[in-house]
Image (tube, rainbow, N blue to C red; front, side):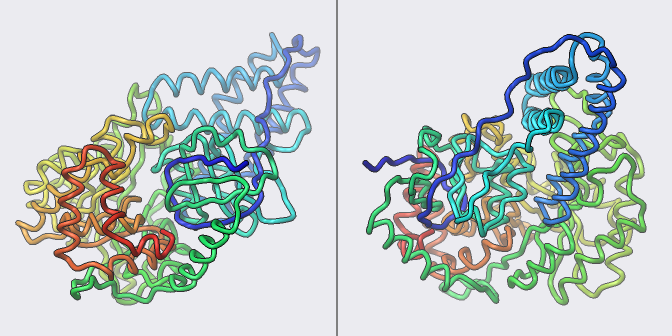
Length: 556
């Protein structure tokens, strides 16, 4: 008998394939007496740490962009000196496996208690713990099951290290019982183009090897699929063939131009975005230069890295976000990991108060790289909350020889006071991931809060509209570079709210462009008004999908 499970669709696509369920996690060790040779056990712990660190770094070199950054950050955690030293100290009372297990558990509990972004890092610590203990046992590392045929991966949630190395040729869809629409799992699945569903309650009850149908657009998994599901897959395959390429520019049905740009993390991803038809870069995440480092990269190192991104585009704009350190991206030379609430602490532009010179040197490197190209390089600062901060950043950028500066709108105050902030800079870009988190007071990584952590929430959309309207009053552009831009239906709403450009994972460009071409600006505006009157995020989404039959035609 067929069973159906519903969750939040985060990457569109339809497939029929056997399900493979992630194996049970590494279990807690049975505590043993303290070893007779503590130094030998200490050596085993150090060797396990080095081996896991090397393994994750090796996997990082096989991927690019977000996946590369996540794996490098996880690798850094595997050799965390505090964790390893503390575990070794406990060898006077217990064995190596138990020492590593309990120390990591204590660390994760401390991070969970902090909440916000630091709670997300707790999952990474537990992932590293499982890998270390498996190494100490001589067992295979936990992870994605192997199969000779393509399969749908079902899991409670995936550790970043697992999601980052998903092979789209083997894993044709991903369905998680936990997670949220803006979690790392969802973001990385989008970058890989794998149909994905999160927050699908009960899906772990599906037996291994059961044939399943997955619709990443509607968020549905159905067991024992038949001819109806096969027909839906065929429709999607035809649509995917139509959406295989995008050459731009993106025009609405009435000819209104909406630039579609790409979010990238390094030179390889920038080149792929250029080949995909992106009209430049709407968000260059510069963290890729800083991750897995104990010291600040030199100006020369940064210049070379940024120049590789700029070289991918001949005549389009590249928007560079300055270092967004802090919260879930702690850096030993820049941030304080002991902050009680790091999501609301010293992160983004605020780190320039603590570590004087880091931002100035980064701007110098961006300016040097810009001199090597004829493209239009803009810079923007993350986590701007006031007009005063915007003014300070604009002054630093100008002093570095970068005349076009902007800000990220991620904090509610920045959306509410966008006019005063935009009076100090040339443009703004809305980061919907953080804006949603702060507006709804919900950790975007928690599956239990997935309904709140949804950019379709009318309160979030209202703030986006307010920021866009204030930008229009000043004749300054207000774009969106958060994950919301990759949702074709939500893209229509964002344009209707007054957003002037959209930036997303390169794989999302064709679908977003295809849907936008079916509406005029007036139709988009009327659709956006309906979402502001909705009571819930689901009501807003259902209303918009009802006005856009092209979504069902394309299987989006």
